[in-house]
Image 1 (tube, rainbow, N blue to C red):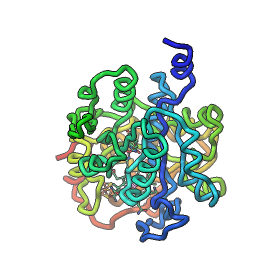
Image 2: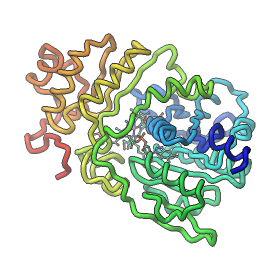
Image 3: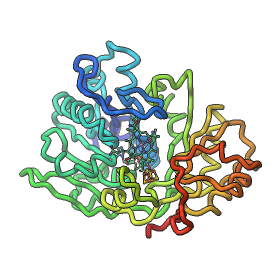
Length: 362
Ligand code: B12
Ligand code: SF4
């Protein structure tokens, strides 16, 4: 191996993950923007990136692949003159990953994909996220898109893809990958990487973020929304998948079955969640928002989480969401007092006992 390729392997980037704004380029063109919920702290440019970008980067780094995350949307919002093209030109990598998780990103994600392909025609463009997984075949029709990694857990398939590209191995064995042969034929590899739990990776990967800020001198790339420095918040990801089947939801149990091949919710253990919360408290006093009802996976799991959290005695405020009203007994155990008012409820419906969540889909 030449000195140049050795240097590239140790210090060069293997993957750049780009987070696009919802509209490319919103500074010049006005199109109807996607609706943004009041509870979401980012702007209508959707500068918040999917938290899974951090777990992909952390997992790849642990497997000796250098991955850099660049939040283009945040940088464009912070500085109207930010030169996206020049930034992409500076970043040299064999693969550029772009999230198309939330559908309102379609315009921005594809705009940036086309820009990357124009600037780095020899590099590969990879898309991923829930929307990309659903629309993978349509995306293959776009000449700027080479790959889509499908499913809700792409950390390991991403490693397999980088390995295959680096070693010149066939792509047929890369799990969850949709790709094109040289003659343009689209190949859909089976969606077989569907891990049963959520303890095998760091997600959110705060450890990675903390050192990547120094490694790549890129604090701004990890900020999830423009007002974060004034109103910071952090998060815990309690599961991938949902046991409910709300008709309006693209992340319901039938959606996950179709899009991610998931038949069972992947849960993060209470021990890991509290370890994540401890880690957060070492660098921030910001509120911690736990995504998904703590009772997903069963009331006992929720009880265990709150028991461990009380033992940890952390200074941060915890924000939870509940998918059906919390009963007095649970809220007393969790909060130390009966307090249904302390929980944000998505629904006032009474939920029959049979509908209480478990990790299994009925
Ligand atoms: C947590 C969550 C949030 C959090 C997100 C926190 C974060 N930064 O990730 C918050 C509360 C902030 C949020 C916001 C929104 N959300 Co939301 N959210 C969810 C929820 C409940 C779980 C998502 C989840 O489990 N993610 C975990 C996994 C799947 O994703 P991940 O770890 O981040 O990433 C992995 C894969 O997706 C993939 N991947 C992602 N990006 C990429 C990129 C590449 C290159 C690759 C290879 C892979 C890849 O690999 C990652 C690692 O394995 C789902 C509902 C559900 N049950 O799924 C809705 C859901 C995803 N949200 C949805 C929506 C609509 C929104 C909003 C647009 C709402 C709004 N109108 O304001 C905003 C967008 C915010 C923004 N960008 O500015 C929709 C998306 C539907 C769609 N297809 O468009 C869902 C499905 C719910 C619904 N209503 O239908 N959301
Ligand atoms: S409870 Fe929330 S995440 Fe689950 S299906 Fe309903 S809306 Fe979607």
